[in-house]
Figure: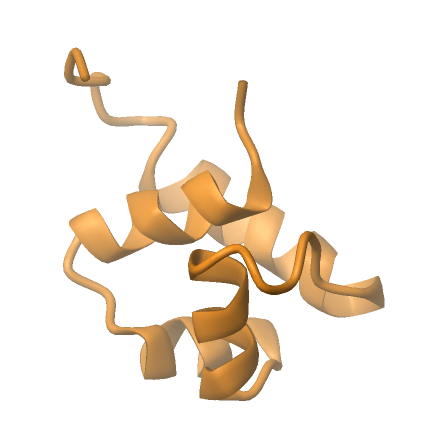
Length: 67
């Protein structure tokens, strides 16, 4: 199951920093950190759409490794 937390973690595994994810998605770095650490369950509005799109572009084209 893909969660917002796992999307952020997947993006970090591609080499993006939380600050970069924030800029690309229109969120503060602290908000990205809160999502990654489970303090916020989901981003709101446009940020959610942008985070989902960024994840699709950067992560879903790569083969998934077994956890």
